[in-house]
Amino acid sequence: MNHPDHSSGSRGPLRLRRLDPGLPVPSRAHPSDAGIDLFSAENCALEPGHRALVGTGVAVAIPEGYAGLVHPRSGLAARAGLSIVNAPGTIDAGYRGEIKVNLVNLDPSEPVHIGRGDRIAQLIIQRVELWDVQEVDELDQTDRGERGHGSTGGHHRLT
Ligand SMILES: O=c1ccn([C@H]2C[C@H](O)[C@@H](COP(=O)(O)OP(=O)(O)OP(=O)(O)O)O2)c(=O)[nH]1
Ligand SMILES: [Mg+2]
Image (cartoon, rainbow, N blue to C red):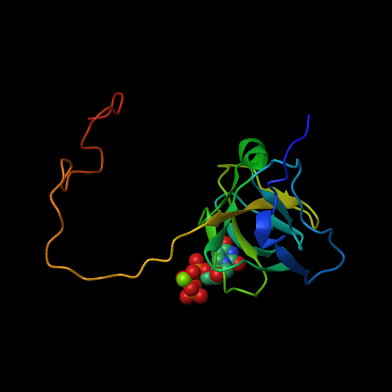
């Protein structure tokens, strides 16, 4: 069966520069995966609760109207407690610097060792709408109104 190629559409592929040619070009592990896996350009050790801004050795040119979101990888999260402080990190369309990942070790007792070349995060490119902001005196009335932060209940065994 033929599968149409939705990988790049008419906008072309994501343009990426390797700032560190010793690392492979980031790619999807499977053709239909959402995330492009990003490599660590560094070796680092993270003690429990500690964080580090880790380079990926790549810069990208995301087209206007899109953003890059840097998400954690679930395997490393489950196995080692590795996450990202600002998950998901936002890569603006105009940004041409190195993508960096603010890794954090959420394991309570074990350090996490990151090796150069390890896949530490995944980049997801999403369409975004670029809204202007207009200040107003009144907002429209809705059923929810100002109720939030658990106002609908449903937290098992919490008051
Ligand atoms: O995980 C991340 C998040 C951001 N960035 C880069 C790309 C992004 O376009 C830029 C700014 O990110 P953001 O707007 O989230 O940070 P800020 O603290 O608001 O910085 P700025 O004042 O530069 O906008 O930093 C990364 O490399 N990795
Ligand atoms: Mg900003």
